[in-house]
Image 1 (cartoon, rainbow, N blue to C red):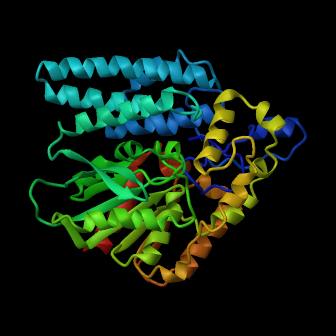
Image 2 (image 1 turned 135 degrees about the vertical axis):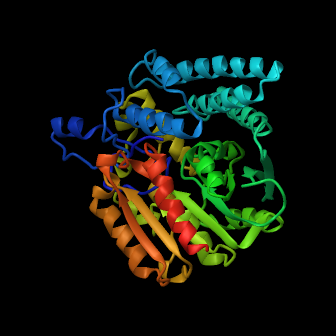
Image 3 (image 1 turned 90 degrees about the vertical axis):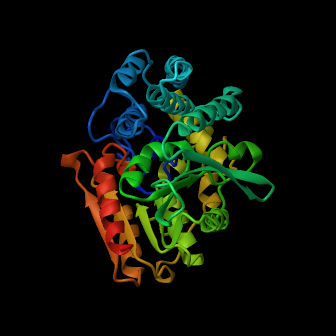
Length: 426
């Protein structure tokens, strides 16, 4: 997940279509552009894309067991700034070392140690997939390794983390479900939806522990365009509500899901997918967005880095950034040498706020909210939502809760979300 140096913050956690830094653009005589994934605090790397990923994605996961600070900085110290191959090599090395520790503990019957190590190993393999192109033979192997380790770690949790597969249009949507507590009594449930480059495992580290602590069942899934599904030519689609409804079908069959207290929460592009589904599916009783994406098409059409990304321009970018942009195009079924094609590919990624009649929350980090187009999208959403139980929150830079999806302060993010959900799902 990287940056799209554009005037439009909202889109997908993988809509990390960054362009050269604002400073570099200014030196070239161009107007500096807003970067929705800018790291508002310097973490480690000079390259903005890599530093955002390190600070928000990697270090941010520490709260929920996805990272150890020592392991993160030991790995970062060996990475060549802005180089995709170096990033991948070093994180895959750390993943293997952490996996070995986990397997050693498991063999000795030390389940807590094994669970903690295997979870981090899963996350490190996932982090090693960053900026990896789809023709790289390591991509499917590494993605499946991350999934296998998460499944193994999940069986060491209490209650266990369950793996499931939802049949959908000739394939399956892989996902996870964890009960808030043992037994079959109905509990309030959170369905977590990611954005552009999300894997289901990411969302476990994003918020699952906070959900369980507050008495919510947790559920997440890879949708078309996410995880490894583009390898099966299952790309993002304008009617994202259809695969999501198939996942809701599965949830509604579970006796431990309280049908009257079922909420959907989407981050980045999921900030459009979740309300779009709520527009079509009355089984969703509350919807939260971080943050709201009313219509992706005009957002992309306004993104100069996308519309002007000629092959020559892309070739001038460092490998971490260039590979990320190409990978995002691939997830939309757009040729990787035609980045401007992402504009047309996002036609129809929209919802009508007036048709979402349930309680709704949109929230966003202060840095990401600085962009006028982002503000316009939030206003469209909040003005159009008919339910009086709607709320908009901007989390503060001076509390380190300012980046895209507030990934660098997941405690504040969870406080905003769950305090609101607790009130509306009483």
